[in-house]
Amino acid sequence: MTNLITKNKLKIFDSYGGNLDELLKTNKSAEIETFGKSLENDWKIISTKLQNLDHISKRLASYDFTKQTLNELEHIADNESFEILTNKINFYNDFQKIRKILEHIKSLTTNESDTLWAGYKTAELFLIDLNKDIEKIKFCDFATLDRLEIEFAPTSTYQELSLSNGWGYKFSRLAKNFDNLHKKIKTNNYNTDKKYWWKFW
Image (cartoon, rainbow, N blue to C red; front, side):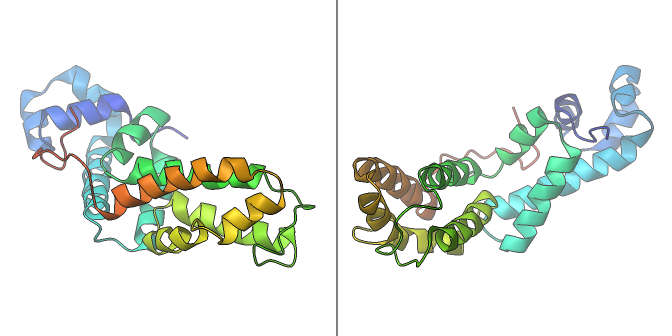
């Protein structure tokens, strides 16, 4: 599948402030040819997705809306433009860092892991819930983020899991990293400028 969104298309979109008429007035063939026959369609898609991302970044979107938007972006944007676009969501990268923390816990857990003190009869049941949390965090679910604060608390799920399976020495670092990211996201501690929602550079 040809990527509908690329870095070059985003640069052109940005240079005209999202105004397609301005591009058409200049009649710059090289820029128009970058989009090809799908100029109007691609331009509309970029505009719509940027507005969706702005909605998400302002924390006005539901989990389902966020998941759908990000899934669609993965299918229509190349890797470089996907990174550029998701950077429009100020908390996106921090959610992905939390996802990696959970994936690290997953890598330390096997079907033979002792999970009784963590509240699970079997490791398989624990991993089912952990995989669900990883999926939710990937798509920036705030409800799951709040619940994980409890899971990372002292004597709660992850500490008990770590102590029962010989990696308790790693728990403090993982919990500290999570706490810092959680605090940053919840307090919305991000440096934002006054650029228009379509601005990239």
